[in-house]
Length: 315
Image 1 (cartoon, helix red, strand yellow):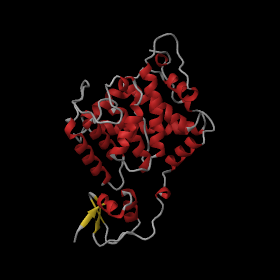
Image 2: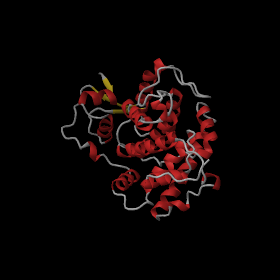
Image 3: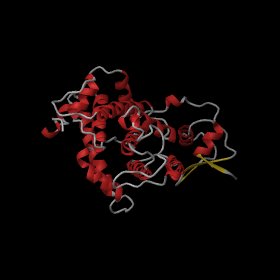
Image 4: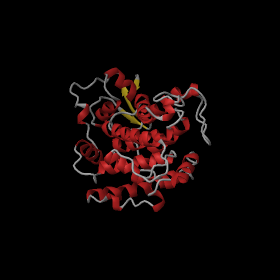
C-alpha cells in the first residue's frame, strides 16, 4: 500500500494542506493515520465530496478579534493599534532603527513625524511605514499556510522603497546571491537557500498542531538560513507572530531591551539544556502581551507600555 503525506495529498486533491489536516482530524479521510511526522493518507482514500469553505476554518478568538478591529477601527486604543505600534517599534528597534516608540505611534496614528532637532534617518521612517504594511499582511493572511511566496512577499513589503533598495544594497523580495555581510552572522551558502528553506517549511508543515517550541524552532532555523541580505530578523519575527495567530498560540512581542537574551537563545538553541533561554524569554513576553491585551480591553494600553525617558527623545 502506498501512503502520501499531507502536502502530496493536497496537490493530488487540489486543496490546501491545512484543509487536508482538518479533514483528517474530523475523521473524513478513510485510512488516514497520524504518525510522529504528521498525517499519512493511503492511495485508496478519496477526497470527500463536500468540503467546507477554506474561509470557514475556525479562527482562534484572538485572531478573529484582531482582524475585526483592523477592519473596523473605532478608536485609537484598540488591540490592533497596540499590536501595530509595539510590534513595529520593538522589531525595528532590534534592527537598529532609532525611532522612539512615541514617534512610531505618531507615524501610525497621524502619519506625521514628531521630534526635536536631532536628525532622523529617512530609512528609519520608510521601514517603519513598510512594517505597518507587513503587520497588516500577516493579520489578513493569518490562516494561510506558510510558504516561500509569503516569506518573499513580506520581505518585499518591508524593504520596498527603502534607501538600501534604492542604492541596490538589497533586492526586495529576492534571496541574496552572495554571502551574508552582517557582523556575527553567516547564513547558509546562497546556492542552498531555496533548498534549505523548502526543507524547513516541509518539516514544519508536517506538524499537526505546532506549539510555542515548534514556532521558536522555525524562527531559529529561518534566522540561521538568513535568506535575505537584510531584514531577516524582522521577517522572522513577523512569521512567528503570524504562526501564533494561525494556531492559537499566545502571541508575543520580543522587546528590544531583551535583544541580547534573544540572540543568546538563538545561538544556544541546539542544546536542550540551554534551549529554555529562548523558551523562557518567549513565555515571559507572552505574559506581558496578555497584560497588554487586558489593558487594551480597558482602552488604556498606553498605561502599560511606559517607555523610559531616554526613549522619549530622539536619539
